[in-house]
Image 1: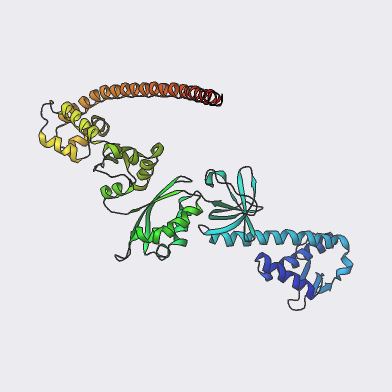
Image 2: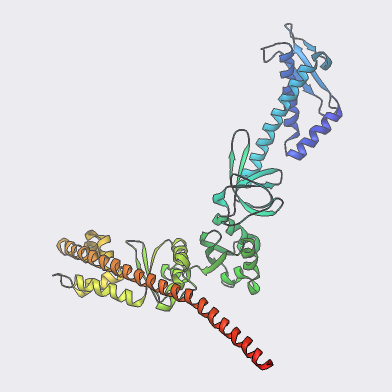
Length: 440
């Protein structure tokens, strides 16, 4: 072995990002293992090996009984020990490469990276990132998104695991932090922490809501994230394949934040019940479907963003709930107008709310006696059953009407084409007959 060996080791060290000294130490240990196997020795201290760091020469020796060292020529060890040394070296190099990968990618966990799609394995996408392969489980992929081999893939390093024989690098495009890193890459103010993403909720592939605030009063947080003519947000939406992104202004007031989170719907009023962690939102009839969103998506994301359980009502529904509550509670002896006002201030706007909070809370907050609190809850519980039955009946009737309307519409549509065909045929016949008569 000579300087050529050193050049090979230097090349491996550079390509695999492994310390050159570690590789040399592994090589020395491999030669010692080969010598022990050649001489059938069990003594771990019997043989030694040292490689010249400058010239590349390797010296192997045997420690004899009198304390001296007996050099062993490499040629004397034969082919089998050389093969043993080779196998040990390969194993050691693989271990060092694995350790190097683990150390490197553990530091990069949470980082935004760009890789190249390789293949799909059992639904997971394998992506080449630098000198390593990462995998993106189906659960971390954006629904409906497909990549072809060689496609550019931008993703988040979600987790790095030591799997014993290899390093597992878990990637994600569905995690909320992927959106956060994209904003850091596209919006300098977010990367510089001038703008802070205070909260986020996401349904990958469909919609994301972000609440942002600025530490500098001169910087408009929402405007900076959107960019001039929407340039910044457009780049992020394009990267996500058209996923909608709502950017709302953060506010320490839960009422204001919830109103902002439900945009683009216009909110009339917000009633908070801290005891239940519930926010009741009042919106006009024409804003109801917009506030709820397609399949409840808008209100669901707003609830996650704000941390409140959100109920949306129209003014009529809100007033009806309050009226039912007042009708139920007012006849109870000992209940005053002040108690009713306090219940409204506490966000208790229906008999269901009162039933859920229980008598202990009413006793403490309304300054009511235990008997009055128990009577209020009992009355609301009984009324809640009646209201629930009526609501169920109303829903059934509404569904029946919708089904009947749909059936009628289908019937009309099925008749329309045949009528149109008859009219077209009759017109064609008239044209032909009329044309023939003119010629004759």
